[in-house]
Length: 98
Image 1 (cartoon, rainbow, N blue to C red):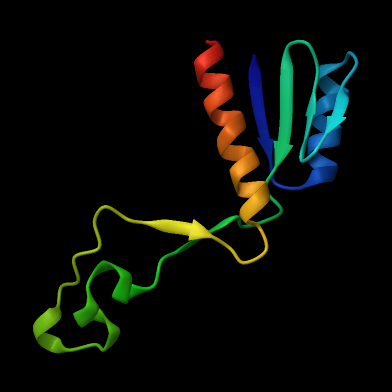
Image 2: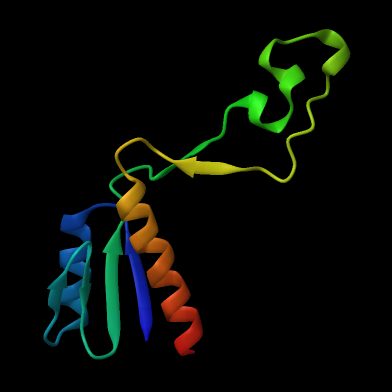
């Protein structure tokens, strides 16, 4: 199973047309026998707030520099949680199938 992730839904439609064959429209993606095409609606994720790394980072102080932000952590943008989970599930599905 090949997974294609486009920036926007209309680009995903163009990719599906270029791949050819019959694509069934699902909730947040298009699927054929061999391919899945989904999209990201611009940004799906954002960096978590600094205080989530450490409470001291809620206010900037010179003694806290440099900030230790590794590993970088992200969360879904407001209102995009469901589609973010769809993309994550599709990535897992594509990796497991191979």
